[in-house]
Image 1 (cartoon, rainbow, N blue to C red):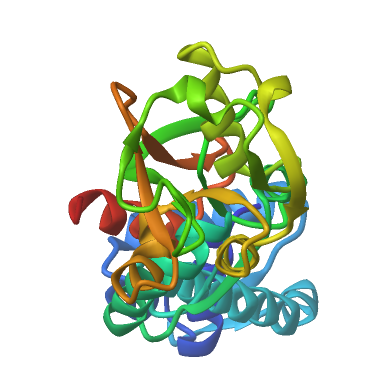
Image 2 (cartoon, rainbow, N blue to C red):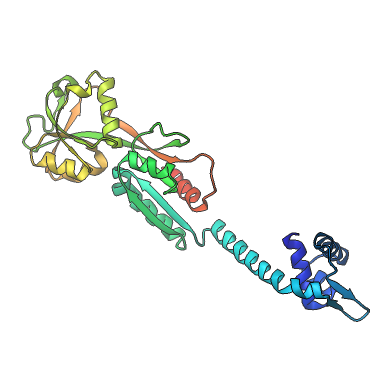
Length: 295
């Protein structure tokens, strides 16, 4: 039994005519007869009595009719909902992001997405990269945007935007506005993001590639947000490593100073993280297309 057979049955029953049902469904009369015969064979009952004037339901047909109509109603409702999802007239998009993309970049892109697809409900969750990847693996979010490509199983990481990391110092620090050798940083008091942060992972990887091991840093404080790192540096706790996206205002107003490392490229990639093969999420796919088309 399938929905085409049920649809043919319901229309023959309502119009009391195979010809009328065929006309309504844009099918030939033999095709309608075939669907009804297949349904009767499947159920092992006779559904219609046929005479020269009209077609009437048998007792089995009268029993099936209200149930078949209800099933068709549910099917059409589901189909309409799926069509709306495919057309992004409805649906939900849940994005998880680490601090930098979540606070400084994605609100703009999500705003553009909402303007284009106002029927899709959008949620943004912000945490460290480790939490974002855990949410993704546990299917709590549809898409992750993080500051480093992790080693999470079964996830794919697609490079998105460049993000320049900068060293910030208190405004009256001896390095403010200068360029220094990387070796001068050994033993300098510094403020880092917490374990699991993409920014922390990226900066330690960059420093280590240039010969400065994490053990060489004098970590004065570990904080759970980029804003907190900037505030701690401004208060004189130590130097900090943050994204230029986050530090731009503080640098421009002189609240903190900027330091450049000689011969060190401080640019990292932001990544889109998602399952490569899973249940299709039309809203997520459309949002990824928007992100990739505007970079």
